[in-house]
Amino acid sequence: ALHGGADAGPAAGLPAWVGALAAPAAEPLAFAAGGVEWLAPCTPEAVDAALAETPDAWLLAGGTDVGLWVTKQLREPRRWIRLGAVAALHVREAGAADFEIGAAVSLADAFELMRTDYPELDRYWARFASPAIRASGTLVGNLANGSPIGDSAPVLIALGARVVLRRAGDAGPVRRELPLEALYRDYRVQDRAPGEWLERVRIPRRAPGRRVLAAKLSKRVEQDISAVSLAISCEDTHGALRGVRIALGGMAGVVRRAPAAEAVLEGVAPSLERFVRAGAALATDFAPLDDMRASREYRLAAGAGLLERAWHAWYGSGPVGVEDPALDAVGAADAGSPR
Ligand SMILES: Cc1cc2nc3c(=O)[nH]c(=O)nc-3n(C[C@H](O)[C@H](O)[C@H](O)COP(=O)(O)OP(=O)(O)OC[C@H]3O[C@@H](n4cnc5c(N)ncnc54)[C@H](O)[C@@H]3O)c2cc1C
Picture 1 (cartoon, rainbow, N blue to C red):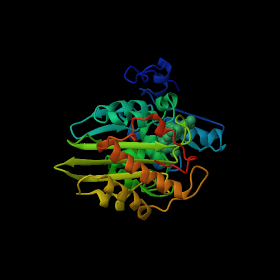
Picture 2 (cartoon, protein in one colour):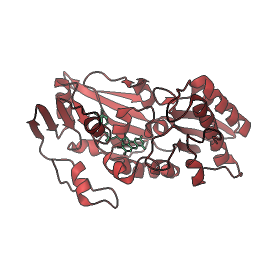
Picture 3 (cartoon, rainbow, N blue to C red):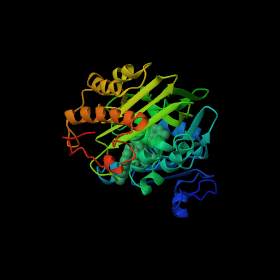
Picture 4 (tube, rainbow, N blue to C red):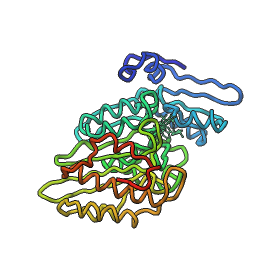
């Protein structure tokens, strides 16, 4: 199933065969072995049709999540549908209003595109897994997997991203566009009809005066899963914060916005006192669970600390700031001193 392709080059610094693995193909591929079917269609319509026929088929993007279901959980679908062969899903464009990122675009390529407008996210993205995973895993796969501790959803929700869903209809594809946060209804429950899949994500280009900050807390700096992650975005014009969007991972069964905390900051002049109050409002927004990564108390205190960090990063001159790598290494184990 190795398809070469000139327009799907490997991520920077990786060997050419990595690109070939993910490249679009001119011919579809289908075979069956051991009762399991493997399809690699070349058009989105063929993906629609295959999913309409078998809605319980497993879509395969980069395989960095779904591969573990096979190797660790010893599960297997009756049908695989690989997305990487569909050229249209490799779309990666900076439009006037949005970045358009298709379902086959790797995390590395998506992050590189977003760097055009949001270079301050680079450090956060560097905390996502490892270069190898970022080269094979896709951004849309991370959103589709919908983990409550997935790292891209908080940022994309804070930026106001929308996902485009599609499925087969009687007269061609039926598409829906949803704010990303509306996709996630409950733990592992998404607003998706049978046979519906994610075609692409649209991420708004940067508006003038928009501030963005994202932070991830985990026990290790590299290759570790978040205990808590937070992203905040707002416009800071004419002395007041507008369009405040705050999203957190690790605080609920899904990555969610924090409406009470947002309300504390919306329309007011930025001050440390307001950011501290917004942090306290997280206890209204969330009732996090205790688990092996962090306690409920730690998660609430850490979320509040990250909001406070946003104020220091944007307006403060003190020693606490996102430029200090040691801060990112503050782990969930260090529950006594979330900053
Ligand atoms: C070592 C390691 C470290 C990791 N570290 C992190 C980390 O730091 N942060 C983090 O957030 N994640 C991490 N992950 C998880 C994983 O890498 C990401 O979630 C990745 O973005 C998944 O993308 P993928 O293309 O590999 O998805 P796949 O594994 O191919 O698919 C994931 C799920 O989404 C479904 N799916 C894929 N594409 C679509 C689509 N277009 N429409 C509908 N359903 C679809 C699949 O059927 C499957 O259920 C890590 C994984 C590993 C193995």
